[in-house]
Length: 169
Image (cartoon, rainbow, N blue to C red; front, side, top):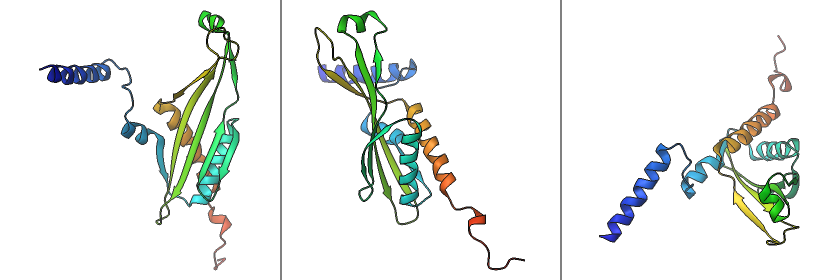
């Protein structure tokens, strides 16, 4: 009986969270759907576009493995002493770290998976001299990143004027 009550409570909480407009904790499948996008372009074009976007938004590229299709980058660090919690904890610094995997399929499609993690550090804390990391799960953040990558891919595509026709008339 307790097993059924636990299952019913879990199902009720999941429905209640969805109905309340609060984002349910991401499952690995939900996270995958948010973090992945396919592009109709070759791998080299998409890879260069991802690098370009990371640099345009001010991220420092920390790792590039073009053969493996792997990129890591970090946003600038921000300092925070804005609220009483930060004052009590001694202030904090934080930034985003993003990992991109770029993988091509044989039919001219390339898949990009982004994984963004927010890292917060407490360097001057009297209580906690550490850090925590939290996955960024907001679908809007990923949609914005993929929109920028898509625009960069579009700008890198060959234009009709780049390929003069054989018949000038």
